[in-house]
Amino acid sequence: MLKFSRKDYDALRRHGEETYPYECCGVLLGRFEDDGSRTVTSTARCGNTRTDSAHNRYNIDPRELVRIQREGRERGEDIVGFYHSHPDHPAQWSKTDFEEAHWIGCSYVITSVEKGNAAITNSFELAGSDESNKQLVDERSLVE
Image (cartoon, rainbow, N blue to C red):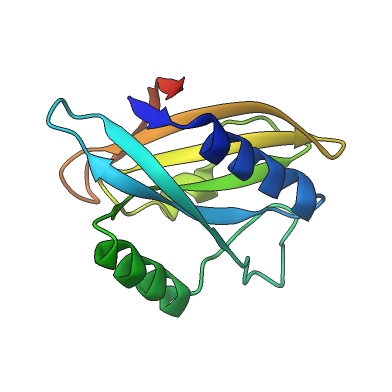
């Protein structure tokens, strides 16, 4: 399960609307709970560095990711997941999303942005022990 504050949930959906018709992307920071759930305590917007297909692909600059991770750790937060938008496509992971997901145990949140308006937001956990058996599984989200 992935737990959000209303503020953080709304912020990632708004990010998708603001970058439409291109994909937005960002990092979810927070903590891993003893029960296996993840709690988001802040979000970090990232720039989509894809120049070839920004309307249906995203990439986070590794240097930006390292900076976000370092700043999060200074606040006592871990990277618990990532988010991105799907402009005019369902909030379901694509083959490319799966191939480029590598953070086992983290959440991958996708918001469908239809004609500029955030519609459905779904969450998936990257389960497995390594690249050979990873899988994205539906995950319940709780917005408090």
